[in-house]
Amino acid sequence: MRKIEEAWIDKFIQHLAYERRLSPLTCKHYRRDLDLLASYCDKIELDAWHKLKDEHLRSYTAQAYRLGLSPRTIQRQLSAARTFFRYLLRERHVKTNPVQSIKAPKSGKRLPENLDADRMARLLEIPGDGPLVVRDRAILELLYSSGLRLAELIGLNDGDVDLADGLVAVTGKGSKERLVPVGRFALRALTAWQKARKKMADAGEKALFVSNRGTRISARSVQARVNHWAKHQGIDIRVYPHLFRHSFATHLMESSHDLRGVQELLGHANISSTQIYTHLDFQHLAQIYDQTHPRAKIKPES
Image (tube, rainbow, N blue to C red; front, side):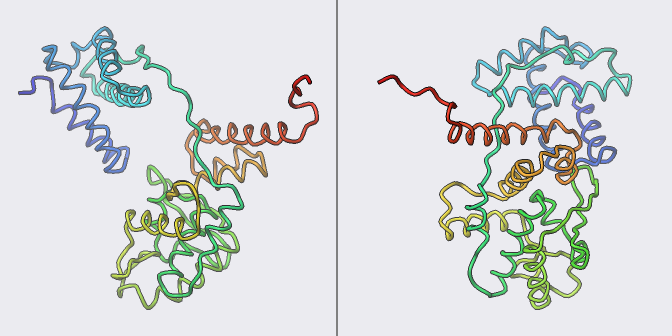
């Protein structure tokens, strides 16, 4: 039986959903992490959030690490708790934020995967001209051309793409809207899809991309079609929708080195989220240096 004040978790989740307008999935993740913290509080017989101190949280973090949780997971759990206590402070239910001074174990920064330009070109050259192939070609081209998140792609409506000006109106995280350019190959694919869409979409359906049932395509379906075409085109790594976004950003950084511009195109609220691609760019440059500079590597003595 839970003793800690569960009602405050409910109020916090409502705050995230209705005031901050976070997605249902994000709210679900916050609740899961806070439920784990609440269970720990019950275990050590704490019945109120104001009784939770930093020493309790250090013990909670150490226990999670001993159980084999990754530093990244522990960081996420502490971040959820930190945000929760900021809310409790705002509501004057507690006087301090005990999570503020707690640090999770450090984890190595994992660089995102991406497809090089040659393999991306091979992936996008999918054969055929049936309506589903035309749709899939438009999906793949738009994912790479404009660096969309999967949720942004499936949330597009038919009127969100301006073929004349080569722009797509995207609703990103936190319901923030941005305009993103669409390249000529994606425009060509979208033009062909809009003709095919008239025969596939149900009457009154607003979605830009529909399934063979005539309704808005699901995220799972897009993932399955991306995987299908990657195997069909002989791509030798695991391909998923977000890989197109990573490749989009990486290739732009390699060509332009315009961090702020790439941030705007990706819709990142913080530039720190975009800076990961500068690491990728440096790796690329370092590899070229090692392969081409006559004094890059010391030759072994004979």
